[in-house]
Image (cartoon, rainbow, N blue to C red; front, side, top):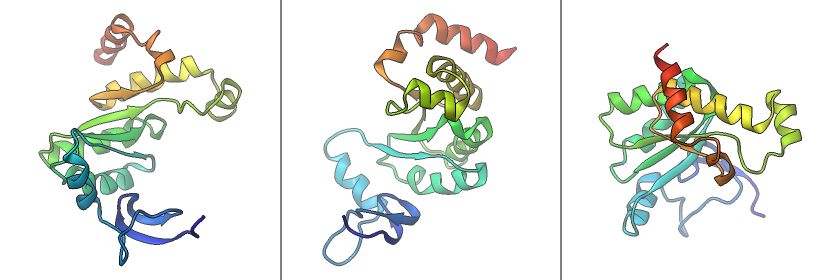
Length: 165
């Protein structure tokens, strides 16, 4: 494994470190270069799973929302309504057509682990995160196929009804 080293404006995010930076021989490729490259093959989903305080989520989303080639941008629903809303508001401010998709509970998290991390079973947290994503104004959800069984149009309509109350 390549040791972590600081990066800026790479496919992994604007700031921070990456264990395996995607790079050319001389320097890491920037987000815009990757988006243009992948766009040739169809729609592009930028999957940084943004999860931080609202101001940081807003700031980090700008790099993706400014790219015309980004069709979908992911945020973690566990970041909270205000964090997701900050990204949605940045999308509106930047006049971007990018869809904001909220990730519910990661599929790698077991039922036991979900209880330890979030204090509730997976199904309960998925429903809560879906409702929070609707309240925040997200365009879509990212979830496992098993969760689709209880996130059907009937329950989605039910969640949306609570949004206005």
